[in-house]
Image (cartoon, rainbow, N blue to C red; front, top):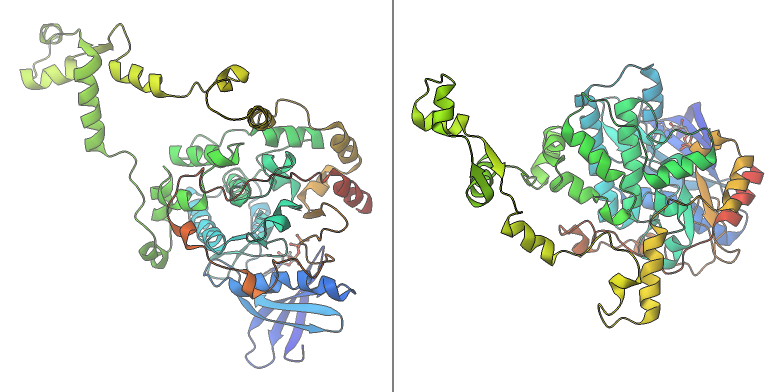
Length: 466
Ligand SMILES: Nc1ncnc2c1ncn2[C@@H]1O[C@H](COP(=O)(O)OP(=O)(O)OP(=O)(O)O)[C@@H](O)[C@H]1O
């Protein structure tokens, strides 16, 4: 502490203060987070998690860690100072004037790089929001605030804890399912949407509407001037089923928007990235069109028709331009074959599962139950709503840390913790190299929860405390 002089208090978070400090030696400015340490010795390790995780993240798009130390009952984390503040402040400064597409894509592609680094290290951020994305003096984006982050290697730890800011929370969390890497993708989608519209995607006047809108993935479309790829990306990031949502890896490498993002990546990152998959090559498109034309289209216009319209083009060209085609009466064989092999997607109910394989009745019921949980046409649970009605909706922009049972430790910085939780300490963070391989988005959802958490009780307590 003696090495720094305090310039000013930047802000106060739920866990303590953020101070702007200056190194007495170098005169460099840093942010020092001052976090009250819990009295119980056992709670200290959780409090230190933010420092430990931040120290592990060395990436140009993540707030750099300098050092951490304890003094007088506080933990101090010294980190890079992002002089241009957070994106929420930046959005407010716009006063309704939209950001340019280039700015949005430049910032968003850097957010993706930062998030990819976190996920590659098997860490979930769990509180991505515009307030936790920072801008440096030279305009670089940095993800910060790892107070809610957790490692993925302890299934118990993440399955039983909910952390997040309600406006940015994905449908699966409201549905008592576990937080996973795609939940971070949802939150990042919210930030992208905010950059495009200066509004939150899920605006609501009540908690009930908020939750229902989130769970139905109902948002107003982006302004029409944005490119198709951006509309498409948002649509995918807001898929209500996390398995249908792209992973960060997919967004950067094989999504329809990847090429657009790549154009906006910093040069040094481009070299390290894979070349994105080109979804639609003109030559391939022409080949497909030709194939379809031969297979299943009938030529009904003739050169004669074209010529009678007064065209003076040579026959070779006028044939191409003037011919009109229409679909044959019956669907093409290829389509029938594909449909024959496809699952009957819309068929719900036991008929679809009966006799289809050798699964037990319980397994079938369980599958059915999971399908039903995804529908979200029903109202949110009465109890959840009645307690949320008491809370002001503005609270939905604050970070919540909720844990399941009194003997199960929460993961937030002020949490009490048992000694035997295996997610603390640098040794707990391991790199799973298989995760670095490109995979389908479905495979890239990290885990399933077999014991969904009932966190309404904890939320009730928190709402009362607020
Ligand atoms: N590295 C940083 N550079 C510049 N400003 C920062 C940095 N880290 C935090 N801040 C600012 O300090 C203030 C307090 O941040 P802090 O993370 O402590 O709490 P919070 O994000 O406001 O709340 P909570 O952590 O409860 O979500 C915020 O205004 C934030 O923008």
